[in-house]
Image (tube, rainbow, N blue to C red; front, side):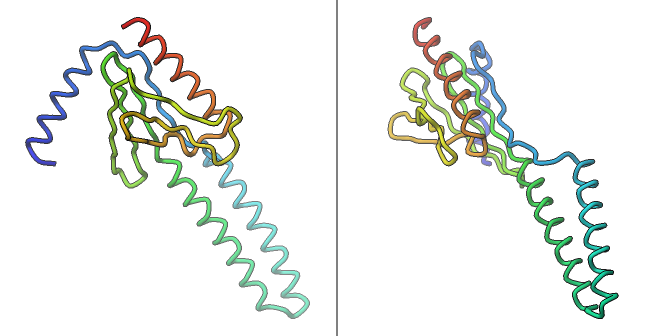
Length: 172
């Protein structure tokens, strides 16, 4: 980040700090399993695979035993990818003058969008289904937020943000 960009960001943050925060949300994906649950699941799968592998070894099909180990590795790596993906999150902050969306990826990269709240539209299907999107639209810019949320969570979030935007427009 260049020095000019840094000063611009600091100036913008200073302006935001003077405005009262009307809405502040942090969106996280749902964690599929706790670390303890993951350990118990892997132990259970390992035990079942080991017992099944021993049964195949006793009937003379010993090469099958190795494939049971591959299954365990595949399940392990699938969960590790899921846990890595769960480290991403989004923050949405509404003040009198700005709605700021920040998206943080598992690798630590940050993306930021700012909108003037008076012209902002929050869009979502009335009956959200898996794959529905919550979008923020203003002056030709569109940002999808909460893509990892369930349809019900998307609808609740969109309605809460719409209510706060409506309050801001009537108060200001």
